[in-house]
Image 1 (cartoon, rainbow, N blue to C red):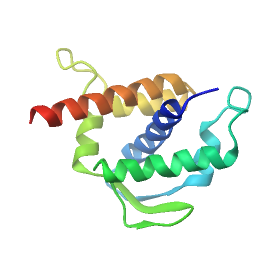
Image 2 (cartoon, rainbow, N blue to C red):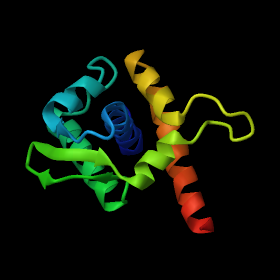
Image 3 (cartoon, rainbow, N blue to C red):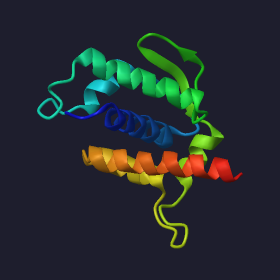
Length: 139
């Protein structure tokens, strides 16, 4: 069974992927649909649908409070008018290696999710959030 940090990272990867792909156009995030897409019933069968939904909804809420996203309206089952904030966009635009610029982390997350590589996407999210916090502390 996967722990909450892993679930959180999956959710954040999903949100970042969606918003990076639609930037700068605000989009609606439907928690029910997105939560269902993220979990593998065979490996995550010990987690109830309500728990999956709750982690997804709270991950979106955390991203807003942390300043990575902006949203116009929060409803029980969705967030409307969601767009990356400047902080979120900059975090995703950073190349994996500043010494050897390559594909951005945002693009890598999208590719990982398209391939179904949840653990890769989750690892990228962890690196993005850590780097973002480190940069904020130095600035």
